[in-house]
Image 1 (spheres, protein in one colour):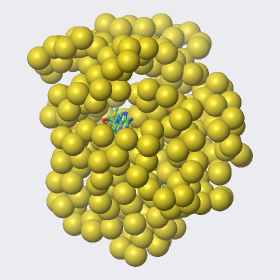
Image 2 (tube, helix red, strand yellow; image 1 turned 90 degrees about the vertical axis):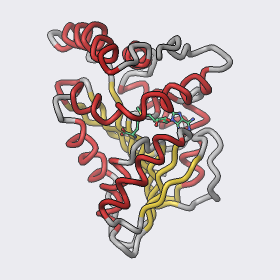
Image 3 (cartoon, protein in one colour; image 1 turned 45 degrees about the vertical axis):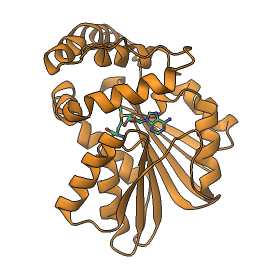
Length: 240
Ligand SMILES: C[S@@+](CC[C@H](N)C(=O)[O-])C[C@H]1O[C@@H](n2cnc3c(N)ncnc32)[C@H](O)[C@@H]1O
């Protein structure tokens, strides 16, 4: 199973990303744990914390994939709150739903949605998170504009993303790990093209400072970001 990796700029880019995630859904969680030496859940936990949710609040976890961050948000809003995990890959959503059932978290539900055309009314959510999803959007500015639209005034956007480290020795390590090791792991997992796309997508995504600028242009304020894992992971937040 090895289609060509999605190519930004192709008209079918979004469709290619969509079918890639459909294809890798079964190995996605395991690959995450192996690629990050088990650290990915701690980064999601930091993102959940940054969303500053209180019991009873409403949150959208966009590009939720298999739902790990959605479940963390659900714990924070409690049974009287509401979390929607939204994604355009149905196989990823199916896995997310299984996890929510296993954990007995009734306050979270999962919905098919395209991040560039969200099926939610204006000012619907108190917070919106997007973990490792923004990099995959065909049009980042359109995505940010939709994210702003569905947040209440004062609502918080949290973006967790892989970013390219600028400084040595991390920059060298990034090259080795993402260009060599990750595609090799992907090959073992049965889909090297998806894991060749991963480093390419990081390289074509704005760096931390540029992403903050795009959030500002989209109308977010009080933007700040934290680099984690030696500069490979960026956690941004902003307020509508
Ligand atoms: C790398 S995964 C991240 C999943 C999850 N947030 C996590 O922390 O593991 C990216 C997800 O974004 C979804 N995605 C990409 N573009 C999308 C779009 N335009 N609309 C909705 N979902 C999208 C993919 O289907 C995939 O599940």
